[in-house]
Image 1: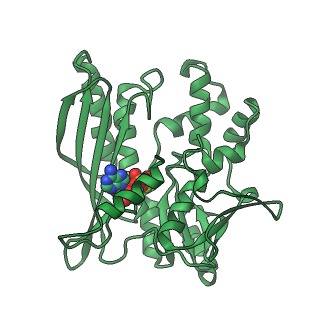
Image 2: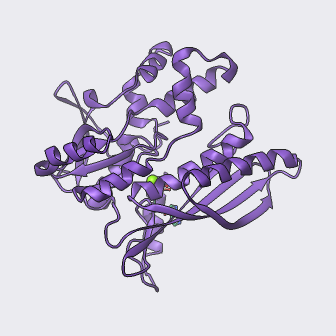
Length: 327
Ligand code: ADP
Ligand code: MG
C-alpha cells in the first residue's frame, strides 16, 4: 500500500476526536489549543538505517543532526517556533558507546540551533539504528500555515532550489565522500544536513498573505498533491520555472538523468512551498525581498482535480497521486 493511501485510511480510522483538536491528521503538524495567545504544534518523524540513511556515508553525528532537522522542519512549515523535543533511539546491542554519544551530540547541537530543549524519549535495542524525533512547538493563535487553505487561482511558490538533495543522494550512491568534485559538495551537504526553513516560515506567517504552506519532503509533484488533497483543489506546475541549482544540473548531466525529475520527484529538499492569492503576489514578493528571503513562482492552484505538469506551455503529464513513491 502506498503512503498516501495508507494515511487516508488512518485518517478515516482516527476520525473521532475525544479532546479539543484544531487540526488532526493530514498536515505537517497537529494543531492543538494551548492558550489565549498561542496554539501548540506537534509532529514526529523517524529515520531508519537502510531506508533513510546508510552508515556508509552518514557519520554518527550527521544521523543525529539529520533526524532533528527533518522533524523540526514540520514546525517551520507551519510558521511556528519549536520549543521541546522527545527523542527515541533504537540501536543494535553491538553499537559502541562512543558512536551513540556522537549521534546524540548531533541531535543536541541541532536542538540548540533551533532553541529547542530535549525533554525526554526512549532507548531500546533493535537490529538497525532508528531515530524518532517528536517536536513540540507553538504558533500565534489561529495563524498556523496549513495545507488545507489553498484556493483556485493562487500562485504556487517555493523558497529555494529543488532537486539538490536527490542529486546529493545520487552522488553518494556512486562514490565515496572523500572523492567529491567541486560541484558535488553542495548537493551532498544539502542531502546530509538539511537546513529547516525556520526564518522563512516565520516571515511567511507574519506576512498574513499566505494561504497554504508545507515543507517539501517528498518532491514538489507529490507534495503539491497533498496540498490539493487537503484543500480540495488541483494544481499546475510549470516545469521550466522550477528553480534548479548549477550543481543539480551538472549532476544530472553527469549521470545522463533528467534534472526536472530530480526537482519534481526527488524529495528531501525541505524548502517551503506556499500559495498566495493573485492579488497579493506583488505585495508578498516585496515583503519577502525586504526580509532577505527568496521565493520562486512555479505554478498555480486550479479548480480541476489532479496535478498537471506544463512544459513549453504544453501539458505534458497528469500525475495526480501517481507521483507518489516515484523513486
Ligand atoms: P510529513 O512528510 O510532513 O512528515 P507525513 O507524510 O509523515 O508528513 O504525514 C502526513 C500526515 O499523516 C501527518 O499529519 C501525520 O501526522 C499523519 N500520519 C502519518 N503516519 C501516521 C500514523 N501512523 N498514524 C497517524 N497519523 C499518521
Ligand atoms: Mg512536512
